[in-house]
Image 1 (cartoon, one colour):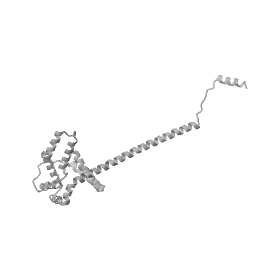
Image 2: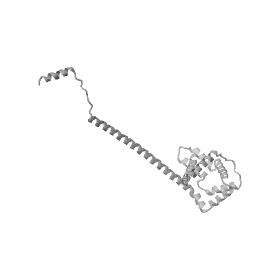
Image 3: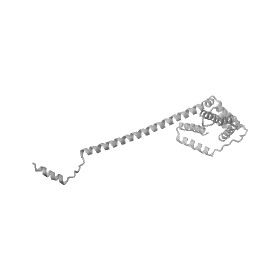
Length: 220
């Protein structure tokens, strides 16, 4: 479930960034954060009225990749990634979200959410739109647009990180190289100093050496 939320949230992020409006993007994030914090799940039986019927019709017209399709996508992914979820649990969830109480609870929850955000007249306008050729195309292609947008954002994200990591490595190597050159220069300067000014050594002079020196002088 966290992954589904992550997918939807990422899409909102991509959409907001595409608007090239920082203030608007921050407003969207603040609104999402506030609503998520205050959200309370309601899976109770929904009213059998014209609003509920219009919501059901709208969700059918919208088609691909609403929350039910997102759940199905996630379940299929779990099946493919063996080991994350046991086959028994995967089969149980698949059944529950397709025909069991999982589907009933989710449908009720979605209808309650729609009722909080849209009036009956707004729902009628949305239904009319999704009945048009543009609306049908939007319903059909929106999942592809969303997934391609997420892939594009992920590739750009990974590329930027790779560039930053490469730049950091190059800076480190350059600093290390400069430090090495500096140390070599210091050693070279020290060696030059030793050659120009060789250290003076003191050889002790003993008394018997002086005697020999004077005795040698007597032969000249």
